[in-house]
Image 1 (cartoon, rainbow over the protein chains, first blue to last red):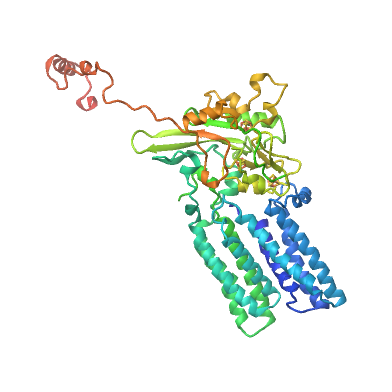
Image 2 (cartoon, helix red, strand yellow):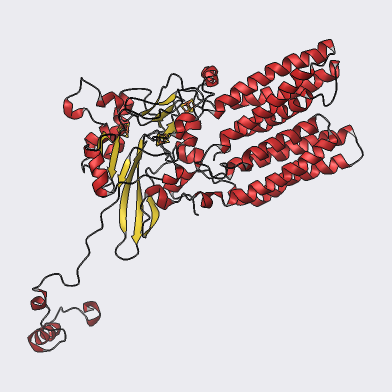
Length: 292
Length: 259
Ligand code: SF4
Ligand code: SF4
Ligand code: SF4
């Protein structure tokens, strides 16, 4: 799949932003006034900034309001509804903390739950797609949720929780990579099943439909940079998991805490790039671009 | 509404005959023409006369090399357009309701004025049947020529999809699969029509007819063949003498060239 920068930015930023809101909603850290304002501002910049970035790749962003209508079947629509609901609830909850110095506990819990739900709906946009076997797995929501919560814990300064969540996210990430590498083969989709020409014969793509490229090839048959996959996995894992844990284990300093956050977000962006770049869409079979 | 109908009154679709298709791409061109000049946003052409032309097509023809266990390799031309799936995953993922499947005839369509161009429906289609138009920013797909098949302004014989009307080999057939007696249902039954990627569980309406087994060259071509066998294999007898005699004449090819 084409790793569009807008979508990578969106999922990383809003993942961390909603992760933060999930912690703030349950009163971690228990802050009020200006300190609370700072935390909420960062969370909103990440979450809303991410949502804005995601509209950059739309053909008609001016009609985005229509995307709230089909929540009955569409995970993308559900994500939109959940995100807006969460942001509204948490805005009220945050206003209570910042301006009145009161914590509306129940409202916070609702907002916290909705934050996690929003990340889940995002992950289901990818996990629902049978056409991308690497994504069509419970690993996808597990990975996106654990990374979002780990990022949220880091950003809200929950050191113990952060270490635990990073370990969990790291384990899920490795499992997702290993399982993902065999997913296309396990899906049973091959050039033979795609064309129906495979009964007692071998099929080979002879000629593509056109000499030039097309939307399908650009969007779904991304192969650039795959050969560096292993190196990028190591880099991403180091930045996303290992380095932040190391910094958290050192005696606390604001510098290390900030570096841990930046390192984690950078590593997550690399992991997300791979999430797209390594994902094989079955339509590539028709173009002879998938060797299984 | 992106909820799929539990059943449709009719199941309109195509049968594509892989045995008959000659790979001329006429359906590609007529589809592009009809759908650029008629319903909806025109199909974009990017850099059409430049070094790197690309564009939106609702129907594309691939070609595959098929090697049976025994016998000669075959070249199969493979037209591919939307299969108007019964369980269309492209419809349910759409956040705006722009994509829908019609209850009356099962045609899968995009309402272009509702489409935000998110592209998710194209991600959900296993067959590459949807393309986001680079110029218009909306999703384009085969309409089963809905603006021809019900069009009372067209002569009767033109009320079929443009690709079907155009195909010079008769490799594309249009009809109602809900009617077991229809032309397309009978063709599918007789020729063992198949679904593409059944493991994707889309239950396509369109069916593909597999290529028929090819004729084989027989060992003996004709019962008269033994009588027509060369009389002389070696350089003896009359032809041997003639061969040698001609070789001796000036201007005869050298020994090497005659090999
Ligand atoms: S072929 Fe693709 S676009 Fe057409 S109905 Fe099936 S899934 Fe949807
Ligand atoms: S591109 Fe248009 S039709 Fe496709 S899912 Fe998005 S809004 Fe729906
Ligand atoms: S039915 Fe019409 S829109 Fe569909 S492939 Fe044929 S010509 Fe194109």
